[in-house]
Length: 245
Length: 245
Image (cartoon, rainbow over all chains, first blue to last red; front, side, top):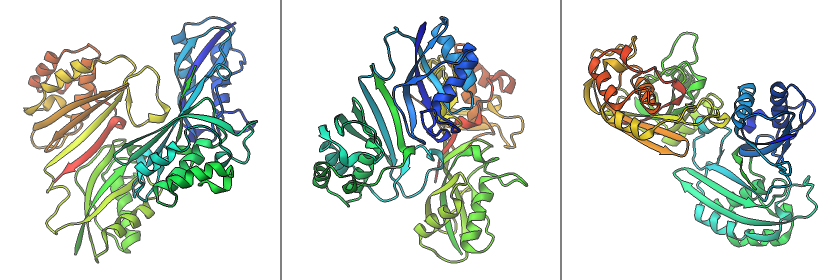
């Protein structure tokens, strides 16, 4: 058995999400089909975590066990050949030890959320950013974001369908990069609740618009009530950025 | 008569180019159709310059004469409403004096060319960059680019179908921005020959690959012979960046 780690980029607009689903075009199945063409047999592809429909990835990670050994560049290039036009590509393929597990070995995950803050839509960034037409106060958003740092019960920032056992998570980093018309929010944590980043973003945008204050965000967190937080930001602004091992 | 200047962004992949062409989806006609819906009559849209099929624009400029006066934001927002999903959008609409002419008043044009220098294709930047899989020497490219600065006969960097009266142009600026896996070439001139930026880019990539030296580029320029220069870089890496008035 030869275990390989894959780092994968994908355009979420092409997929129903990471996870294989009957009759839906998932990234997992797309990769599995390319692997089958390459290795000549059906192989399981195990991802670091799910992403929802429309959510992009710059650095999703998965592993699989090959029946024979190949050079790393062969795995990468052959899979990319079979993935042409699919909306997914292998950025890196690495031979790893048998105890590496894409999901269970992961120490942290980071995401970015891209907001385009301008009145006009951007055809060149369509499905790549969330275009917010009214002016946002980036400093206020950043101030509010700090209230969320650390270990908290994030029930207010959790989708109703979230299957996590506990709503307690530790947000290790949340930082802002504002340049020109773009605001990029970077978050890093061991793991996230379902829709946590998108609900945080949706809530921070309310702060940026002046509809909530940073103090309100602290109170929303304390309330442990999803109905107090802002709307869920759209999927197409979100990118799984990196899985840290 | 009320003249308006429009600054337009478009995704070149959706269009056969700027210029109206029978039976082809041009940007010019797309804007004209939106204008007709907005103003209730057919109006001519005059652009600062043509772009080829697949070439993008961040700041194409055009003007038109409206039969009545509208607030600038109404022109922008109404046109964007009719342009939804078209691949083009109005970034800015400005009321200008009657002697403003999108093409003839333009003093300079600038373009950027985006190269993604990595082995794997990027699904998130597909049709937005030219992916060059072999490593490029950015410094050598930049050194070669300097040979092209200033006033020259650019016959070696001119498409066969170019209709310009003279091959003599003045390249006022050519600069490089390398960050991570991306190389962005910025060029600025009063005007350009047909495919000039794409042939310059194609030739500089040959330098980056080590197939040509900066000195070769100086000689290619002197040769005034298109067959001596490198291949024409693909359209989808090129962006009309700004028209300067």
